[in-house]
Length: 211
Image (cartoon, rainbow, N blue to C red; front, side, top):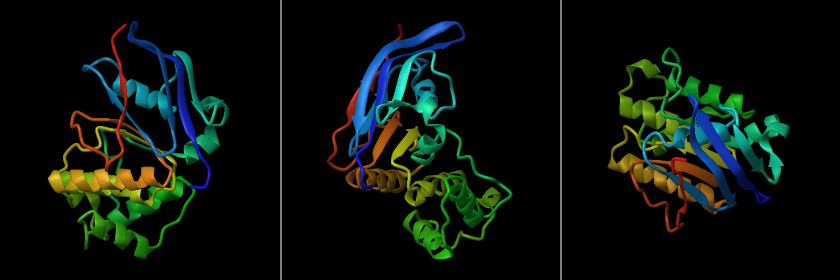
């Protein structure tokens, strides 16, 4: 990642079901850092992440990527973005390898069988490449979903409860992967009920509070 990047919220607000979840949120995140979004249930953490990804409209304020509103640079911004939500977003009728090829192709990249084997070995899924996703356990499906991060060339990772359905080894493995991403100049926005350290990189905290 040769150039620095930044993500900013300016007077950001969210209304859902006629109720103001949060408003006037200001924050700036730069290369090599991660934002830990916290707050009570129902305060809008997932809504904020969906807004960052362009999956939900911005009710008030702006989200800026490299000082430009994200809605003015949709294609290039999405190439810089990798999102993982509560759902694994895997095709159950496809093999593990096919899922990884498909997801990376959507971001404009191609991967080789060797790259697939390497990342699956790293995530404890060695020998699962040709297996249909529907035959995997929930924990294995989560690891397949997370292995897409290791193949992603996006600078901004947006992770909503990434440690769900993972054992202790998987949690540590993912934390190390995020730390390596940050050390290479990437950025990450994370919500999680589990407070997991990311290497020796301190979290930049954003606490959402009901308006």
